[in-house]
Image (cartoon, rainbow over all chains, first blue to last red; front, top):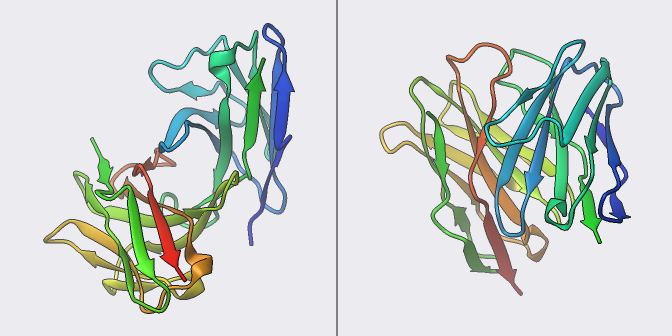
Amino acid sequence: GAVVSQHPSRVICKSGTSVKIECRSLDFQATTMFWYRQFPKQSLMLMATSNEGSKATYEQGVEKDKFLINHASLTLSTLTVTSAHPEDSSFYICSAPGQGVKGSSPLHFGNGTRLTVT
Amino acid sequence: AQSVAQPEDQVNVAEGNPLTVKCTYSVSGNPYLFWYVQYPNRGLQFLLKYITGDNLVKGSYGFEAEFNKSQTSFHLKKPSALVSDSDLYFCAVRDSRSGGYQKVTFGIGTKLQVIP
């Protein structure tokens, strides 16, 4: 089945530094990927939609200059948290839609990245 | 706007008993409905979906769900719960009228606890 690989699984960084999270579709092409943020005991909050070859679409309230998204190829999207602060500490998850009729295919998720900013 | 409600934060069930995790939804058009399970500190894994056809859909690990259009519900069920089913379950919906890969709306999640 379709596999999405997300790296790193955990990262601890100091306040003010930047962190890059990678999301790869291993056995299929993904022109679109989604980035979510999950707070403890809460649902997934869609941050942005990553589009191959074009700018990402950010959800309302998400700072595009802080959360930089690059979708450089059909199999790779990256999320860079710039100038990270402790309030950015969270669980970040990427996903890509499966093959088949658009919208009816399930999403394939990476295993998530636990970011801790000290 | 589309929305999903999972009215129970947690569901407790004894091992071997049937389980139900509730989900109701709201969309303007016809719904695409999904159930996912999340293991601790992991991404979500797809369990099953309803797109069209039979209202009862079967998925992974013995789970099934019943689409009820009149009640706008898509409850997740399993005839006999296992301790290993204890995880966090998310219901999700997407409006079938939307073109392209429009965003999916997730419920808040229900923690399933199966008691030995």
